Length: 159
Image (cartoon, rainbow, N blue to C red; front, top):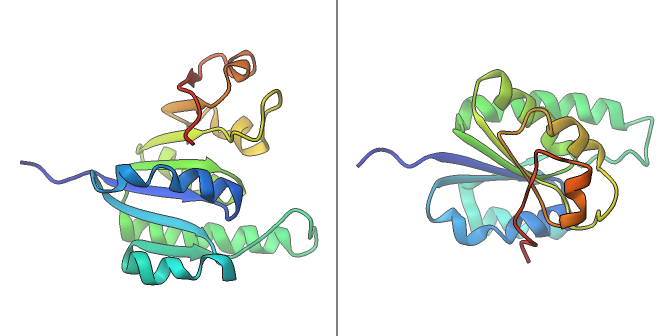
């Protein structure tokens, strides 16, 4: 029996992370890791997942002066963890937190699974627009999104 695939589940905090954690039943099938932004609301993850979780800086486009710097720092943090974890697959529900990791996965020829958020029914997310061209598997949770992402696959909601 070969080694189990190393899968990194990554998203920003909040609703995207809640969607990502709906995939928790898949964790036991893989040598998994979790990445999200550090917030008080998710400090429990360190206790629950120990060395399988790591955090990026919390950044939001609502703070245009600090956001570019935090994004740049997160690029370096992502690079560090990419080489530490060496994932075979990156699974994400977005947003900007996952962008650098998806770029790294593409550069190093790893698989990318992107799940467009359930919050969008008729519009693309910024990360979805970018990762659509990188992803090996691009999933949408609304059939209406297939008009926007013709190569996507509709599998229904993950809730």
